[in-house]
Length: 240
Ligand code: MN
Image (tube, rainbow, N blue to C red; front, side, top):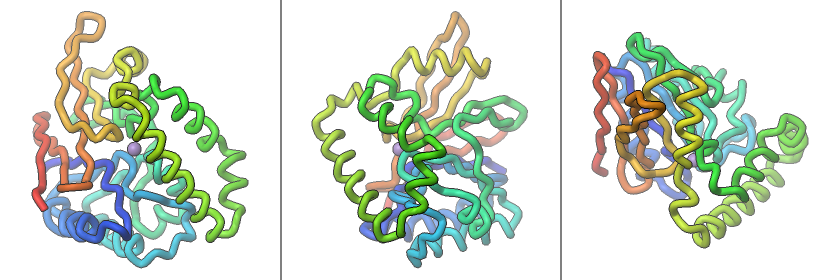
């Protein structure tokens, strides 16, 4: 049985085909797996666990059903859904992991992270990240009425799109030094992340030792997942 990894599903009411495909994935491929790891940005937006969007609710229920079948599901925060909290975990049965985290994957320690923290060349984004990840900021934000939080989240998404459109692509990719530092700090030889929407398997050498960085794909045009079985990894597309 395989362990499966996805990220950047970006579930959104504006993209019902992606939601339908992800629900199919949960009920089909994932139901046969040993465990499912969602490495951030499952949702395009998450303004608090009091979100009552019926589509998000369907996803939570499908995750809960997966857990009930004996497939544990682990979730990391992404830059879009970093406010997923205890309420979401209670409804979905998912376990929230800290980002980054070193997980035991078939006996090997593997670094799992969303990946946005590795994009250190994007100074404007890193500044925003440290603001919104502060506990005090999150307490103030979550105390606002939901309608106001949704309005602010929409503004933030528009601002993010403008920023992405005028920033050169290499700035929004991971920084090689940040990647090397993460390998050094954790001592692992393999990391898995998403965020950049550049699915690939990168073979590296860090301090003279081989290392591997696996990047998961986004679910905008098609599905994408990584399967690990008996220590071998395969990045797979799911045509829509
Ligand atoms: Mn992201």
